[in-house]
Image 1: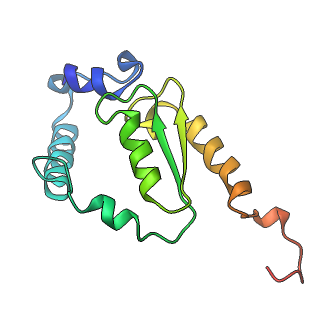
Image 2 (image 1 turned 45 degrees about the vertical axis):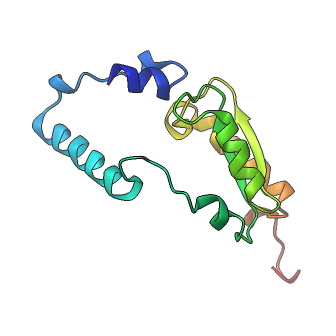
Length: 132
C-alpha cells in the first residue's frame, strides 16, 4: 500500500490510510473495489485495443493528467489525447494519478475552461429564442 500511495499521489501523506485500523465495513468496501478493478482492468491493467478505439471518438475531449502520476506517466495521457481526434491534453500541477481526489479544484477549473474551447455555454449564458 505504501508503494501504491507513493506512486499515485503528488503528496501521498495527505491520503495515506492504514487499512488495519479500518472498521470491517470499510475493509469490505476496499476489497470490493479491488475485485471490481480486477474485473474491468484485468491483471495486466492494459487493453491492447484501446488506442484503436479512441480514434473513433467523435466528441470534444479533454484529457487531464497529473504531472506527478507515477502509475501512468504523463506520456500515457499525451498518447491518449493524440489518439482522439481533436482532443486537448492538459497537465495538472502537483497532481498524481487521482486528480479528482488530490486536486479537485484544478479538475473543475480545467473542465470549466474547456467548455469555452468546445463551444459549450452554461445555462446562464443562454438566452431564450437563440436556438439553444
